[in-house]
Structures are given as structure tokens and as C-alpha cells.
Picture (cartoon, rainbow, N blue to C red):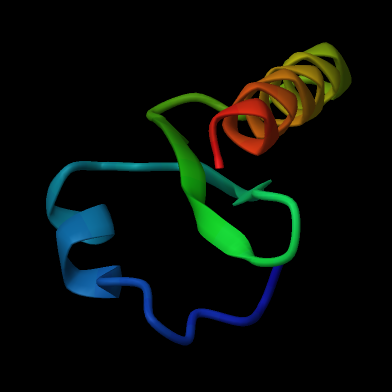
Length: 66
């Protein structure tokens, strides 16, 4: 990722964050939030898969509520 719009790069540097991923949490017709994940180690492909699955499950539950 090279688009750091809206991300506090100074904080990421201070906290030694090496990996960042953000996944939208979608309601029925709009974005309801973002699942953000930070780590001081590189994410593995499996980490990305699990985060994507988690965001999809959370989005499904959010859609039921709204």
C-alpha cells in the first residue's frame, strides 16, 4: 500500500509499526467503519486472509443490525 491519506504516519513510525491493513466494515448501503490492524512484524498472506474473513463476518453482522 502506498496511499497514506488519512493515516497518522508519525504515530506509525513512533510505535514501530511495520504492517498496517484497513478493511471496510460495510452495512447494507454504506460504510459503517474500518477494521484496522497494526503489527511490528510483516503480515503473512494468511494474516491478510483472516483479516478479510473477519471484516466480511463483521460486515454481515452489522448489516443485520442496521
